[in-house]
Image (cartoon, rainbow, N blue to C red; front, side):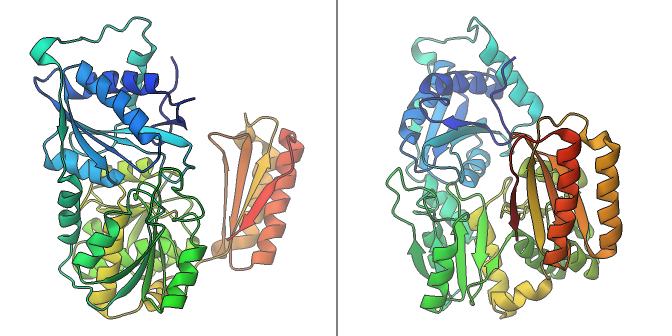
Length: 456
């Protein structure tokens, strides 16, 4: 069976890998399974600002209509907006056309169930099984039973009103610089913060179909950092192409990543008695400083494998309400069923307004430890975790770091790398330790190419 779904939907270069033919088949298979044969079922369809969105939307909707389901066309809207509308409009499913922070040439298709949550692996596998059938046996209704397109001109307005209603705080007088990544946030995020009284200065808010994520947004925040300082703003906000993640900037131009945001929100929710089970969920890539900060507040930290799907799964299993990733995906189940960058921005600004503290002061809740990541290209990854030499090298470094550092070694899921992450208070020592482990991996597993390292 072919594997179409990755860690966040089906992705590829639009019109080459993710073709309109594939989008049509995805629409048919997804709508057929997710609407479970209901009469006049409905599917919410949204997209970001990529030029290929129109192409894929048309094909996807054709597939949905061909099985007798109606398509509720929301137009350009953030991914979490589709999740919200799916629940609010009592639709049977939702679909978002986006490749998040990827380049404009890429695109993707991700599904939501009627509850607004992303699909579990088992449902994606069922869709894939239908795609792999040589004969398309999915029913094709005719006449009055064919689906219709239902335009929702008020879709963005509904989402804006919802987001603004998630806080009681006013942001009057707060100057906020906002990088919309020339994506789905451009027409929505400034309106939400302005509705709360903020003075918003938008950046990268003129999408033209091909400038999404180009030297802007959460993966390229340098222009935002400069603008915050230049404008004398209290807060900077950077979204990605589909606005499901947020990276913030404090009043001095310093970056505030997902670990800091999670820590600030966790403390706020705890003080309000809303941090269920005194627990926050993060991934293994979260900074050690975050874990230490939560321990001082007597807040439990549950760590998962990398990926917001893993965070969400742990949250739902444990009944937790706050989770996130260092990259800026923040999930607040009190409000929405997926990572929501604009919601995160509203809640972060609300903490600032409520406490009267600038973000630079709020971020002092934790100290970020230096992290060194080395990607070691190897000839093969099989058996790396049972290799005695590699295990000994890892344990030696762990013993040297003690309680003041940690080592995380894992294979890449998509590339021929074994990733070595070393974290601790001394950046110079980290390089020495990481290279020691990398050298052993090269020796034991075989070398493919030179390694690429980065320090944060």
